[in-house]
Length: 157
Image (tube, rainbow, N blue to C red):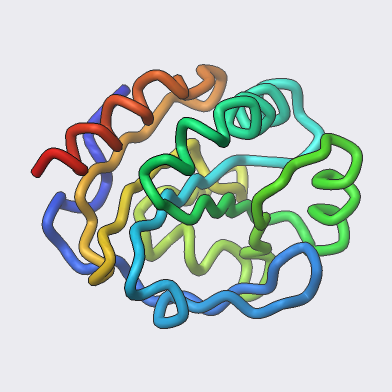
C-alpha cells in the first residue's frame, strides 16, 4: 500500500454523484459523520467483487465506528445497481461516470491510461477532512484488516 494521493489533513474534494438507485450523494450531505470512501476500478471484476464483498462481510465491525461506507467507480449507475443487487452489497455505490472520472481525478486516484478509478481508500472525519488514505496497486486487493486498523487509529485520535 502506498501513501494517500491527497495529503492527510487536507479537505476532501467536493463531489455530487448518483448512487445505484439514482439518489444524489454530495460531500455536503455527508458532513456531521465520518465516511469511508472506497474507489474501485470496475464492477463485476474478480478483485473488485472480492474486496467489496469483504467490506460487506465486515459491515458490523465497520459500523461500530459510526461511519458511512461509500464505494465509487466510473461505471454507470445502472451497471452499479445490477452489480450491487447480484452481490448483495449493502452500501451505496456511486457512479463517477460523467463527467468521466471527475471525482476520482479530484481525489488523485484516476488512471488516465485505463480510464478507471484506481484502488484508493479514504477515511474522512465529520468535517470532511482526510484523516487516512491509501492507494493499492491495480491487481492487489485492499485489506479490510488495514481499514479496520485505520478506523481504530482515527477513532483514538
